[in-house]
Image (cartoon, rainbow, N blue to C red; front, side, top):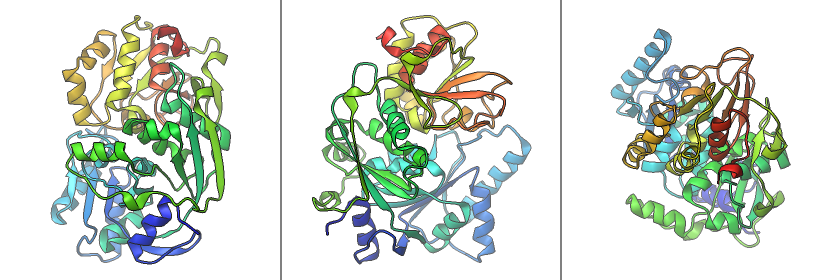
Length: 416
């Protein structure tokens, strides 16, 4: 029996063939934490008696609430800074951006096993990595031993064929897929993305697909690397052999899901579940108080470009708080060069430093009681944006931008 991509990565990592369900000890190529999970990781690192870091590359990111809005967070971030200096780990301490985005831009290569104490570490599957979120204790083990245990996941073969309609994005595709298989439809499984749409998609789109794999319970999402991956890596001086990362024709999958993306229309996830999906055209008179474009899901340059193109075609609804957060400093700088930031500011928007910002509800955009947000983030759980008495709808950057103009959830095709 042949192997799928994740099985190949694990088999090569430990030097023997593996099968789904096996418990294995793997070497972690990259391990990282963020300011929500980092302080707990440091405590466990010390509790387990580690005196040095063994993982080849370790990073600490202050991205969830930085600069700190409260003294408690300031103290824990200081603790991370001191740990990084003592153990010669790298800390991102100046609003450089969101952890997954930075590792994507600067470090990950196909075939890596990446352990991140952040559930959306799965984003890095877009580069053909086995990247998965784990808790702070497992992250401490990855830091201290350079190894961590995991169960070899079963894999769902997700075949995405066809071409997108105008006004439809990869965000609409992954929201539609989650609506199809359910928020618990892929628990501890891998989503391996294949098909003509995936082969022709950009790295940014692949990032969005893999980012939200965890929203249907998946251990990770992954796209087999190809020429588009290699071109991305070549531009960054990180070319590697990817020939071994093609799934075998007789690879074993626990399930096959096929979607014709040409049939997908702009969609929105209705509160308070990510799989509560409706077509945008089905919405009537849903007024929004806040529109947020950014996060690790949709804060990349391509997202900001298409959002800027839409908002140039109208004026912001006067009651809407329009917030934009680039996913990284490099995206921010390029957005400045291209004039995108000027477009957002002139529109009446608020452009915040790179980071998670409003998505996690700790600062920068906490909702008031009864307010409604339309966001490009990946979760709409009750209270996610800091107030359990508010509502969060999820959409693509195009839909978010169109809705910022009208002040109501709006089909973006009206502005394209």
